[in-house]
Length: 329
Ligand code: BDR
Ligand code: CA
View (tube, rainbow, N blue to C red):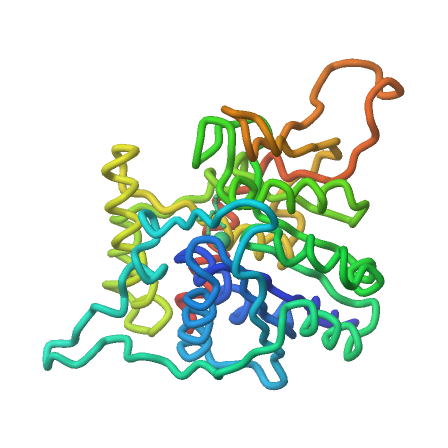
């Protein structure tokens, strides 16, 4: 019987509660080999994103030979807008404040190296180790990728596939009526990446809002499983659930970033539609909007597609995969 080699992936991330869950899913999935992780500013400033990455690695165990880098501290041409109102002041649901019964910290501080290489350097090293065999999964704003297109285009062109959580094709945004967070934070970077000709798979809100856990489900899982990953799921998500209850009227957690990892694990979880998508970088009301050409005109009259977007998902199958992987650890 032929055994398939795991897909080698680099994760570019701004942890963030759902980023942390996406990292756990990737690290716990035998279909993937995580060879590099880089951070970017987004949900939190990049230094905090890096601290959070090391917290997740401490919990999950760091794969041998993993290369780690720290990327952009600000978007290409916008001031950074974080999402700490959703993810908590530390980006991980204010885990750093949780205490055990004896008063000790439930999640003690983690050691972070004083210096880390820039994201582009880590990606170049990964390509040296594994030439022409890498998938990049982006879970935050596309700043690192846009910068690398300028500084290391040859390296970036070697990615076999780029899977990006971001955008909203036929649904409303989640930061504004028009824009999804990852694109909104750095619309110029996103437009540069979309126009670059890279082989892109977009995992937008259209599908990520279909894969949700509610508070009851998370508490039920935590009651059944005492393992660190599920306890982390409970501890890190309380802040985001309270936020969604206040704003949307229901305590739910969309698994945005985990679904992007899910697509790398099993591409059949989603249906992909080729589309021509551009990013609005200027609009007073629409900045960060992903504008897909969905007109029902002759194909020959349409601009050719620049990416494939996931527009439908087998949500029950993904949710089962996600919970199984976290529960087993
Ligand atoms: C995206 O925004 C961030 O807050 C999440 O981590 C996810 O990457 C969803 O819009
Ligand atoms: Ca993210």
